[in-house]
Length: 171
Image 1 (cartoon, rainbow, N blue to C red):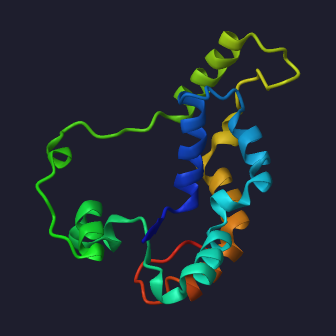
Image 2: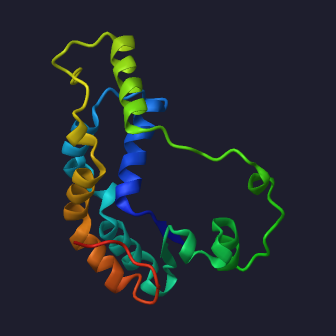
């Protein structure tokens, strides 16, 4: 079972986790995006899905887009339980009122600059210049990501998600 998160959301979250997480990354969002080609297995879903098909057989893959509309009863836990044939247990996580809210780009940028200050890195290693508004503009960023992932997503939609109602975005 694999849930495929739409890459715009996924890559922004991945950068955010690297900045605020244990690694305390100092790379700007632009630097992160400029280095994606070094790690295609992270965002190019067709790479690992082809490998998984080869190893496990296409009939063994159960994939869907990570989207509430695609989930059984609109809920991830219910969906996963349904896929593995196990009844849903009462889950206290659902009862929480506090949601997992991701920090804004601006908040993450402040954390990144704090990471640099804490590490006292030289100015040549990471950009200490705050990101320009264009760098974090969701439209500019979104267009860049969709160009990057479109061919891979088209293959996934055709070969893995063909029976699903919700597909990955393509250009």
